[in-house]
Length: 215
Image (cartoon, rainbow, N blue to C red; front, top):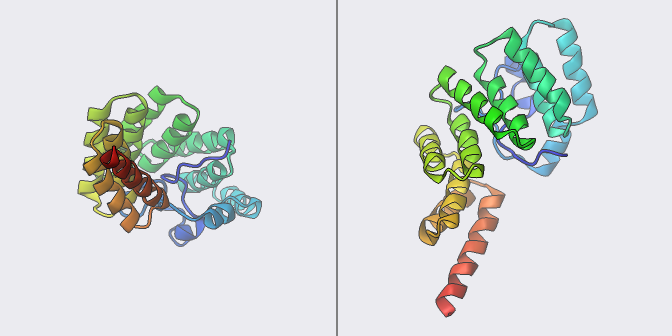
């Protein structure tokens, strides 16, 4: 299974200069949606091999394991990614980004309670971690807990007004609860920020509203 969720898997080029210092969803450094071409490059075997070389030279560096796990996750190699995130957390039990990365693996494999626990842990470590709130909100939405999901998406936006994924997820949440106006408003914001899914959802919602008006 290839991961389609763009929240957590970061591009190597965005963090190599910081020795993999940033990872999934950090509120000011998170890499959100990327193009398919960027995803493909970041998951290339050569990148994985390069990161493995870094780990050989720095076997006690949790950021290196977290970075390789991110790339493995993009490549759909979830079991290997999980091992790397486990190692990163073992080396640094206060590594919020590694917990959030591991939470995404659990979410992708439908282990929602484990995902929720890891997001909770990440947000306890870093309460200002905007993308962590988006990730946890998505778990809540999957668990049919719209009130908690709404709170998390709004918190993410309060921390980062350009969080396109939070707007898109808010739109989906409002769409599901029948609030078409707020759904369109949030899809529009996501689209304006460059989120392709937000643009697609916006068009679908607008078309649906026109059809309803014509009935």
